Image 1 (cartoon, helix red, strand yellow):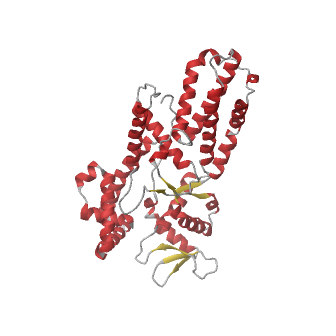
Image 2 (spheres, helix red, strand yellow):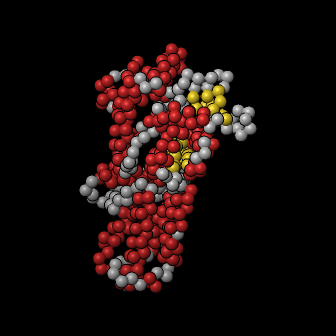
Image 3 (cartoon, one colour):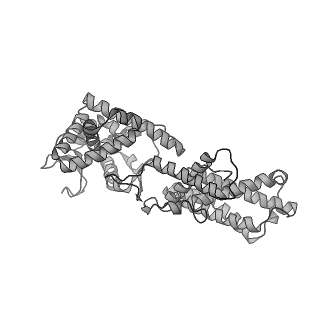
Amino acid sequence: MQFGLLGTGFQLFGYEEKLQSNPLQHLFEVYVQVNKEAADDKNVAKLAHEFFHRLELGDVQALSLWQRFRNLSVEEYIQIYKRLGVYFDEYSGESFYREKSRDILKLLDSKGLLQKTVTGNVVVDLSGTGDLSSVCTVMRSDGTSLYATRDLAAAIDRMDKYNFDRMIYVADKGQKRHFQQVFQILKMMGYEWAERCQHVPFGIVKGMKTRRGDVTFLEDVLNEVQSRMLQNMASIKTTKKMENPQETAERVGLAALIIQDFKGLLLSDYQFSWDRVFQSRGDTGVFLQYTHARLHSLEETFGCGYLNDVNVACLQEPQSVSILQHLLRFDEVLYKSSQDLQPKHIVGYLLTLSHLAAMAHKTLQVKDSSPDVAGARLHLFKAVRSVLANGMKLLGITPVCRM
């Protein structure tokens, strides 16, 4: 239905040249405008519904507009995801399953799971008592499909195609009920693999999203992150000379964003704050990157002569023991995150490790220590840097060696 609005909106307010030069921005402006118009003018809402109906029936003109918008969007997504270091093997949403949703309805019917309501909608009764107190609509009275119908078709097709061990849907928490219904219907259809489908819900970043217009685009956020980080780096006296400051600023800025996003439960909403994101001390991505760069510089300064034989008996100080004990917990933390799919365990672990390393860096001197002690300490700091780097990479952060 949202696409019915967008298609109608483009026919009413769209400009071809704007679509070419900045597709996502223009489609968004059109979408906001048509939403406002549809709220005030029933005729616009009717046109949108008709456009969606034409899409469902396979109207060539409507489908070609959808395909075009989709291709332009995916091209933009690829570029933005590239900046985040994210690559997908396949882009396929539930909209691909428009035609297959007819087969789903036939299948549901053959299993005796469909019922028609007085309004003419076709539903599946999920109440378990037959009183229709809980239903999922799978076809509107005008014959058009819904998300649920297409998601059922998508799930079955993906099982046929990939024979998956687990299928994880990462979608906002507003979709919780939708996925519960989809998984329940799959079970009712006799697909025992529905047990292996899982919804990982995430909360809202407050101050960054609305359908009404005052939206912040991810691309704008990434550009802002880079420019603010460049300014910060330029104002700090200890900033090292580097070949590509833009790239470093982007990587440190992304670390700042990712750590803020992953610090709490994915389900939790949080208030976005630029000031908090860029703090160089405390529990931030900037602090993680700074610690990593500092430890890398330590290795560069002393590395060659010391990293052969190591006598771990030299690591008797409480700070060394605390770090060693913390390093031992890395696999336990990874296991925990893999079980509940929450990155916060890894984030908390890395932040604690960075704080321990920062304190140890002040007291466990490498310079002016005996070769045995210097070598053992250097090995310890190298292990910290290695675990920090691996942990950051798992979170989608590229560690920097200078900043």
